[in-house]
Image 1 (cartoon, each protein chain N blue to C red):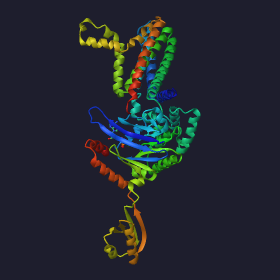
Image 2: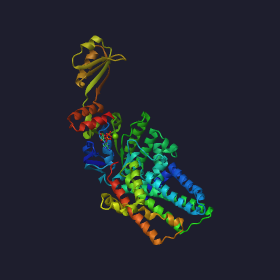
Image 3: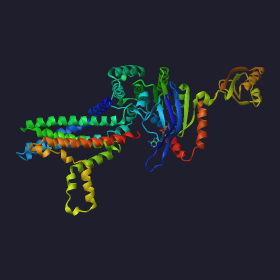
Length: 325
Length: 254
Ligand SMILES: Nc1ncnc2c1ncn2[C@@H]1O[C@H](COP(=O)(O)OP(=O)(O)O)[C@@H](O)[C@H]1O
Ligand SMILES: [Mg+2]
């Protein structure tokens, strides 16, 4: 069974005296069980809107969504989800321990189960030493830990995390990344959003890219960026400047490296082979030869540009306003 | 049910850790104790006046808690975004609304209890005594606050706290004055105002139903039947307001 299935999921915000905002249009998405799915998009693309629809915080204008076959309008669907909002807010007057206890009760856990949940979660997120301090004085990183902890209460099979790494220092980002992978290894499905590509690139099997409320692409990263190398980079030393300048047009780029030697770029492996032969004939030494893949970032940029142009007029102001935020 | 209790307990705990409640209780206690000063002014009548002031301060301070805490009860959670993780739990929205409501009612109940103990002790110290009607009067103040809180939470699910507090406060005042709407002087006959005000008489709960202040001050017995009627009247209103509050919150985007 799929963890998440949405069909035609749409959300339009209407408020008095303002033009309606089409935050999400016709989203068809399937996320399989035990998959780490990255949900990409710029600020204002509609990621949070999608996540709020999945967690039942808002109701769709059209379409529907199911979690493990249960419609998101039903409270039962939320039994399957652990959710961490963009900025987790909790009762400031509670301690992490009381917070976990409270959410355990909301999930209907027994006293013993709540005790066990605290033992496991506090261990995993290193909450022991702040267990009895009120959340009021917590730093962003500590709050994020509590946020993750709350998402884990009741051991739900699906974790939905809204920008879990935003605003964290490198150490914090790594912690979240490792937690996500650990949860995947425990068989959980993880759906998380981000506007930072490197977060997604390293840990996701599949990504969806949202542009102005529309799913512009959704696939394995390798399928999106392609297996075929974009170009091949060749580095060599012991070459004279005349030799480098005299190379044929098949060399697309040539430059001197700061650390000595030259960096040359050709289109494909055949061309690289030819270049290697010429280098050794000229008495130079080959240092490296490696294919350059299109990065997800290149793809992301390409798709943003492509889709933005073909969007209907009305979508533009919202997208622009959001981009300015 | 367990989830309602969890939310209610947490709301109760929040207020216990919040200083506002203590400030209000402190002022209420001061008013009760300070009533002595007024008592001196009219010699021979002081116990009666103390009783009057005690009940009035319970009613007013209880209403202040109900209106100002109640009107921000749900809104605050939306505003501070604490609601996100709570509504993402397997709980019905009405369970959340009822939990918040019952938590606040528990606080109001405890506050009234504290004030009752203080007032009874004080009256005995001053050489007075209380009869059944004293407790009946306090019971009906409680029922009145239960109703007002129901109205406050309904508004807190739809409008901002300031707006909500203003509306509830107006209703609180109007609810004490509904008798006036019914018996308008003859110059109002046939005007639109008369129709509006008469309609208001029928759709605004009559809060004077819960007022046994002068009976309690004068030790005049009130029949159990009347008290039961007032309790049922208050609870029926409350039930209707709570249903509306739950419905208003059910479809709301947060
Ligand atoms: N409650 C709301 N009312 C009106 N517009 C909204 C509301 N919430 C979000 N939006 C709009 O919907 C669009 C998508 O927002 P959001 O889903 O938060 O984007 P993201 O999380 O990708 O940054 C934005 O243009 C935003 O301004
Ligand atoms: Mg967002």
